[in-house]
Image (cartoon, rainbow, N blue to C red; front, side, top):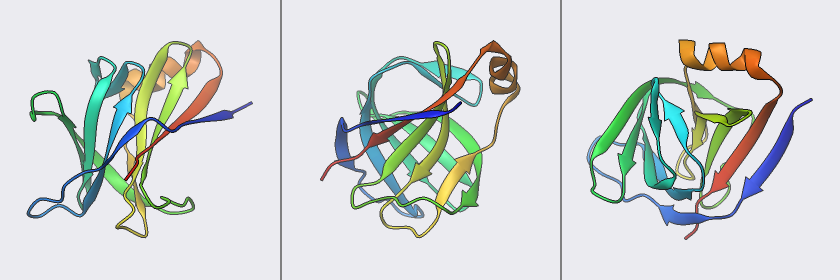
Amino acid sequence: MKTMVVLAMGLGMAAMGHGQVGGVSARIPFKFSVADKTFAAGEYRMEVGSQRVRVVSLSDGRTVAMALANKVSGRDAGKTGRIVFHCYRERCFLSEVWSPREDNGRQVRVTRLERDATKEGEERYFAVLGEK
């Protein structure tokens, strides 16, 4: 059984840069993995491009991860955007980024690390919302 928890803890939309489609900034309240790298809870900006998601640490402005991503539909980004994680026990993985400037979201490709985690138990979804 899948459950959904929505945490309204965001920091707002990301500033748009050259060549970027959009993004969402948020305070992520748990550690998470992207592209087989694990990051501590903190403030991040998820920037979307046509076939990728870039993760930027807001504490120092560095790009900490880049992941291939496909366009996905079927959810609403809302006015401030949404970042969706798949969690298995204590392990969470970036799954989708929904920029309010885009009709479609970006779904991060599942890594080997996440496939291995699916064997650990029930999958939960967490959505962290951006704020204006």
